[in-house]
Length: 176
Image 1: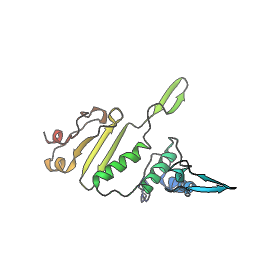
Image 2: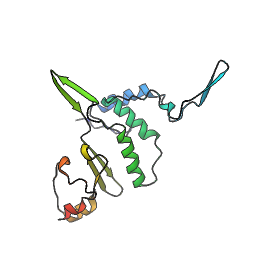
Image 3: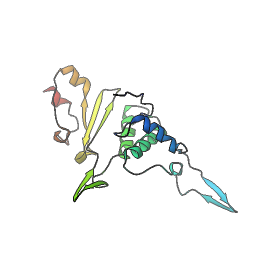
Image 4: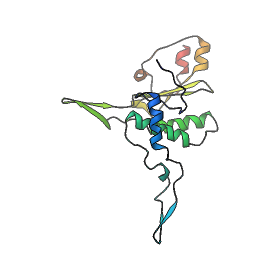
């Protein structure tokens, strides 16, 4: 086992973390601010719209591309003012690396397989709350107040797909 200091604040499943940090060097010129205009000959050419500073940001669904996208989005997003804003920022960043069913396929003979983001888990470290959503309920997170659960001394186990969606606050289920 190799443990890394996660300086990027981003993880993905492959390849190794040190490889990803080295790969980020390929995108070092990316910026959150585009060049607004240049002069070509005697003509002023302006940008098509905001976002041009990230031109070249990889858009495919391979782990290296998702790592680069998540890292730069995290880097350039405004620092949240509170935990509510932080949860929103994290969810927006995750939406940019979330894999919809059908867009990342592989084949084995005649069998077609589709990779996809099966579930998302966001933890508010300040308030010790956790939000979970599976693929079918991606816009409806279940929330658990971990302080209350830990205080109760009770535990419960669910498979992510068997959680009682669309219930928003699941804390009471742990206190029964």
